[in-house]
Length: 447
Ligand code: C2E
Ligand code: SIN
Ligand code: SIN
Ligand code: FE
Ligand code: FE
Image 1 (cartoon, rainbow, N blue to C red):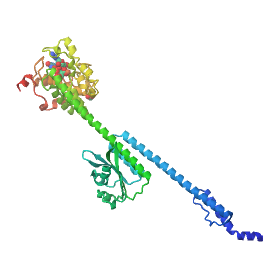
Image 2 (image 1 turned 60 degrees about the horizontal axis):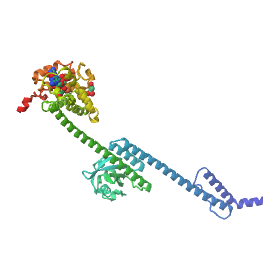
Image 3 (image 1 turned 90 degrees about the vertical axis):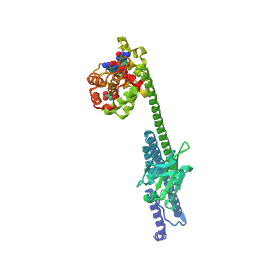
Image 4 (image 1 turned 180 degrees about the horizontal axis):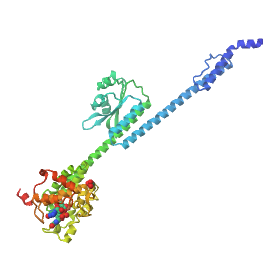
């Protein structure tokens, strides 16, 4: 026992050390990587053991921390990839640059963890960078951003095509002072948006506390700026395309007017017949609540309504008297000729209703297909009234013009048989002012 007492007494220290080691081991086993023996290492096996334990715990702790950091990074990169994918989808799906930029700025603000971001777009005509989209701003001070190249930090970033950061806006002479005061921004980045070597604008980052970004953050900022530049470049391509489409239809339309004048000439029509019936048809169509976008097609169709007469020989077209049965057979084919001529032209296909259907009659007795009532396209029902009005008011190779009263009575009488009664109703309500006077060739020669 004495020996035991001595052993126990002398080695109370030993037991405490064992106890500490056991406790630390348990903590470690339970996942507490900060567990250490807290022993002052001395000599002997136990100290040896304690030191070894602490070193092991230390290195385990470090490895796990590194692993966690690596895992966080992977997760962050995954999120960044997802963000880029969202941006890609927005660029492909949306043709409205503002929508795309809003998607991008959402990602910029969340992925970079900043308070606000804006895009200033370069306007090459004005040589200015101007506010286009923003996220995270409290007021609308940012919307007034309009800087010359080289002006302010953003202007300088655009001019010199380099990223510029301002760690503390309060210490700088930031040109848009309102932004600093009203929005309490501290940190700022201006990243030039460059696509195909050209400046498209500037991406701006604002934060209300100091920013201390790592390399990863900066790289992702540049990547997002690259995506933004691509989005703006794409949108530019699209609106240029839209513009050249517009140019093209303007060019087409003046070609059509040329064609229709040539047609009138051959038809020995009174000067400006086609222009005149076109204007009247558009006028009447507007009162019949035709959609604005259909008016352009109606206009083209009216201008070309008798293009099918190109297929009618002079001997028939210009015959000074009534047509015989065989001649009528040929004359009645002019709407079919129009269909054959125009339908292969994509641009004119939607304008076909009038050239193809202007001789159909409400009661089904017209040609070429004998369509009835609303089977006849509305545009053609409208045009038919105007065409007959103008034809009867004009001299023809086969007869002189009719007096206005006679024309009007005649047209009224044909409501419900030749013409759509609703169109006639609107036609009769319109002031006589817009209707043309008589068109005698002799009048025109005199005038
Ligand atoms: P257009 O001369 O431009 O006539 C267009 C439409 O106006 C005619 O379609 C008809 O609905 C009406 N219209 C024109 N003139 C008269 C008329 O004197 N009396 C009456 N009641 N309606 C008239 P439609 O009948 O299908 O004729 C189509 C085209 O055939 C005419 O275009 C014209 O180029 C030709 N055409 C018609 N009748 C004669 C004719 O007697 N002699 C000759 N040479 N050509 C004719
Ligand atoms: C149209 O295509 O012109 C309209 C058809 C209709 O209302 O009958
Ligand atoms: C016109 O007078 O030019 C139109 C008559 C028709 O289409 O036959
Ligand atoms: Fe015709
Ligand atoms: Fe005509």
